[in-house]
Each structure stands twice: as C-alpha cells, then as structure tokens.
Length: 388
Image (cartoon, rainbow, N blue to C red; front, side, top):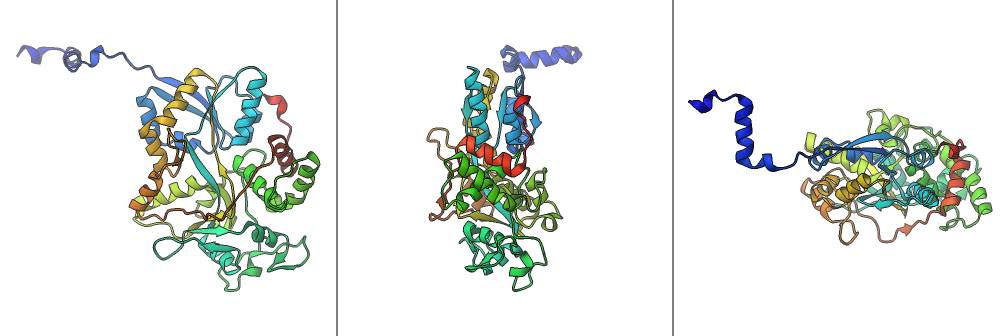
C-alpha cells in the first residue's frame, strides 16, 4: 500500500538502485565533426547511428567529394573520410608539413566498378568486349570488361579495324540484335572528376591502359597522356551528382548506360531489393574492369576523439558486421585481409557473389603529384589550394 503511494520518480529511483544502473556513470555523447564522401553511406545508416550512440558517439557529417575534402579547409573537424587513398595522402602530407600528424584507419574496402544494365552488358558480350563471370543460377549478374577493347570502341576501333579515331562508336552501331536504341557514344560516365575519388581513380585506370599498362612517370608524359584521354572522360559531360544515385533511379538507363560507382553501392541495392521483394534486381549488372584497382578508403583521424572513432569502426564486431550488410568488404582487424563474411551473407540470401578473374591486371595509379596534374587538366578544375 505504501509502495503504491510513492511518487513515480521515487519508484524509478528504486528500480535503478535495484538494477545497479544508478552506480554506472552517465555516458557522455561526443559529437564527431566529419567531412565524408561516398562512405557517408555507412555512417548515415540508422543501425550504424544506433550502434555508435551506444558507444557514446554522434557523427555530424559535412558531405563533399573526396578531392574537395583534401583541397578545402578541414580545421575544426575530428575526422575526414575520403573514398580513396590519393585524397587521404594529400591530407596526410599537408598535416605532416605542419607537424600535425594524423592516424589512418581502413575499416573496409570497395572496388571501383562499372555499373550498367543487362541489355547493354549483353551488347558488349556479343561484341566480345565483356564476358559473363561464372555464378549460380541462370542470369549472370557480373561480367568482366576488357578495358582495352572498351576504350578502343571509344577511339573508333572495332575488331582490329580502325576508322576515324575522332569518331568513336555509338551503342546502336554495335548492337546487332537491336537490344538498345541509344545513339550515345560508348563511354563510362563518372561523377565530377574535380571532386570525386571514383572519377579520379577511373581516370587513373584509363591512363594506365592507354599508356600500355603502365603509369606515366614524368610530368611531360602525364600532361600528354591527360590531354589524350580527356575526350574519353568528358565527352558526355562531368555530372556533379553521385553516379550511384542516378544509376539506381528509375530513369537511370536513359541518362547513362554505364556509370562508375563503388561495388558496395550496387550490393547494398541488391541486398535491400532482395529484402523487400524476395528476389534480385536482374535488370542491373556490374562490369568488373579487367584492369582493376581496389580502392582503400582511409578514415583520417585529426583529433583524439576522431582516433577513438577510427578504432571503434575498425574493430567493433557489430559495426563490422553492419558494414558487410551494407555491401562493404569488411577488413579483418587482426590480419588486414577482407573477410569471407560478405560471401556467406550474400549466399544465404541467394544473391550472386562477385568473383574476380585471377587473370586481371592490377592497375597502378600515377604518383600523387602526377595524378593531381592529370585531374586538373582533364577536369579543367579550379585552383582551390588557397582555401585550406
């Protein structure tokens, strides 16, 4: 009778004492100020936000492209998370010159891929430029793309026959079965090359192939090569929006037949699609370049709180598992190798598992100063060095 008359706050206090929670210190929530590119997909996921909050972190994100992150001021931020190594290297060098070293974390990886639609992939397969990768089930979801032959089509060279090099082939010219009715030139579209790591990396891939599977090693070579490949990257413009958003939109196919994105963006779409509809999205497929470059996104910790966040996302099992559920290839915290969890996860959901050919050529990007110069030439990028 007496207990029922107690005020509600007193009852709550009694419950806290009984459970022992009153003796625990209240967890202080630290707000992390962050600049991020495409890897914000991970930190803006509601499950990740809840897990971070459980560990006392809230992440406030300023969204911008990887190269833009490196070129602009990042004072007052705890972490920056560009999508690839070149931008992270720019930041590390700048901080080292100022005697302000950083800590780097690599919680997961995601290869650069060329996302397309089944009809276009089959046109390239019939041309001998793409090849279906083996997998379970009927329809192939993954193809390997011969980068040399793909670029030859853009140069006006087909099956060893060269026509006017300035007049590259168009989709409807090579489509013998009338699968696609598209008069655009055969090119891969990227995000803004002045801002996005995916675009800069694709530039590096194209340059590597055009230079005889070798990276340029002098400023003169890099400048000449950049001017040579510029039409292959800007012929259809340099859209500033995220290519993945356009590719996954209902009108994506009519906007860009081939888009440069990250593998995790495609896999995250397939995982969500299968969860909602019980099947895969068979209309969308991936082209894996035969000349490949695996991006190594690096979380750059600028403060102590940023370092604590980097340690957490790199080692916490729940966060690593959630990264895998979002399509990332999570790293093994002890060995540094990517885990097999993603393979098991996709297999359980009957989503085809990506398999790369062991014959693929590993591309090498130009040195950082040469890559920067090539990006500036190809993209006609504004000088932002004074904005830091």
